[in-house]
Amino acid sequence: MPELPEVETIKEALKKAAEGTLIHSVTVKNRHFREIIPADFEKRIENTVIRRIYRKAKYIIIELDNGLSLIWHLGMSGRVKICDRLPEAFDKHDHIIFQTSKGIIIYNDARRFGLMTFCESPNLDTHHLFCRTGIDPFDSSLTAQYFLERIKHKKIPIKIALLDQSIINGIGNIYASESLYEAKISPLRLCCDISEGEAEILIAAIQKTLNKAISAGGSTLRDYRRPDGSMGYFQHQHCVYNKTGKRCPDCSCNIEKTGGIKRIIQGGRSSFYCEQRQK
Image (cartoon, rainbow, N blue to C red):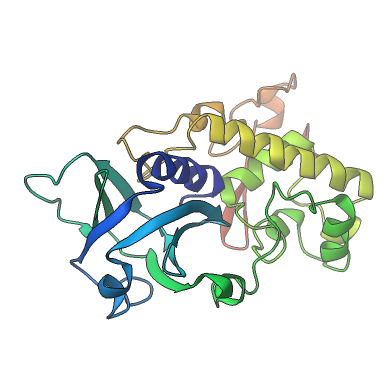
């Protein structure tokens, strides 16, 4: 599933290609996603101008000039394709096609775990997809005090808390592991044991890690591709994620004795860490 850096990369490509354009027509070839595409979707979206495109958590928001906003989530395998003109033949999983005054936007999703719907723009924050969403990692309100207030009574591992979208949104499994490595904090540490100083270090590590990933176009592990079809490159900068048994970049320990980077299961997800560096 695309995490914040991947969604941010796609959002920027869409802004460049479509912000300010007129949506001439919408073709929905399959309505069966995580939520059914509304029956009046095409009618409500056609002949509108895209005023603004931005990211909200792991969602792409397309604000229209008729008071509506499109809500777009890419699910596990969703892809965005941007073309100058309609292709001669559509791919099997090209499910939604937007024809705009500047070109074509195609939503391709093999597994159809994604989502596309709309709501009145003023009601976006209270929409059921966002009413329990936590703070953005780059929001100036994300402070150590805020973070500690949300986690100080939780007797769960800090890695699990980082995946809780009601605390901080947009962080998934890859960037939780990488951020904890950057902060030198073990994923096994309990939330209630995290100090204010460690919270400050972790927030800075989250922002640094996400910024590096955004600059690299995100991480391509399986399905993710940028709208031009190219891969992200941050996977080549991963320090611990999916590197079980290897030496971490900042460790000088004897790997034959330590066994290198560890992989454990937390909340049904894999966590990767260096037990020599992360305490």
